[in-house]
Image 1 (spheres, one colour):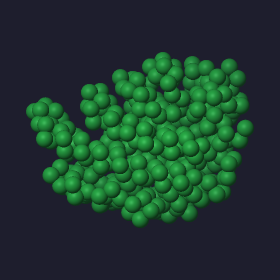
Image 2 (cartoon, one colour):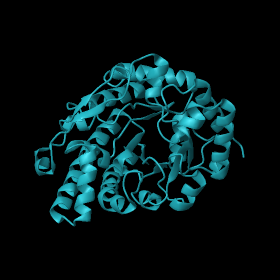
Image 3 (cartoon, one colour):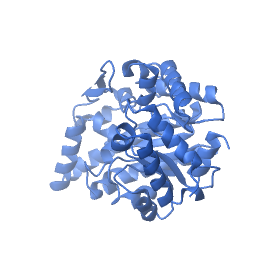
Length: 353
């Protein structure tokens, strides 16, 4: 099998020739290529070249055109500040409060914000690798995007908390309308991403972590909109031979059954959840991807620690039977040792039992 065939087979819960290796190594590529992140996430050619260099060093099965979370939000009118060699941060939301959400317009992914950078980078990677290596584009989830649009993240979470505590139905309706607008922006972007050649239509919803919200808030304000994204995108992705991925940071055990019910193909599991437990909680409804610790294992550890951790992960999930992709629990830190990522890939490809 090619790397692309291997990844797609596992994502479809079929049995690949060996376990695919797919660390989420976006900004890591910028570091190994010697490109400052402010150039990496604004120049599609440099992003693609950095990912190619990363693959040459590591040999993983999936290259990742990814860097930050604001490329969709900028299309709505958000303003960010971009450090020279760091990820951006929000300095001004698209509108100041929920009373102005109807001023928001779903952006054009080819023209608005920096979405076009990622689309062009995916297209360049697809052209370079052909069908040999899988290409993964980004996809910031609707809860995260919504938090940038009206008042900023802190205000968004406070609005939800107050609306729920005080049973303010009018505010709740505005929040749900904002979620609808954000979900539509992700859907439009993912359609363009699939057209560009991505093998993955992704929803990475970091703010939906249970470190930030409760399971009840997830069920009311997040689950319906993530479900809508996948109900719309999955048929399009499958028709193009691509798959869908959902990732939420942190300990997701209390919402994993709901996440599996979104209709997604692959759940990317963060380190706090054992992969074996994720498999039990999802009942085999989805493939699983993850979940070596990006900090203590991949960044700070040794190749031997990576191998031990990877073997434990794969053994606990019967990975050779299919439906398991070895990766990082969350984004690979930019200065992670190349030798550690190579150990991840080698362990996946040589694992036998």
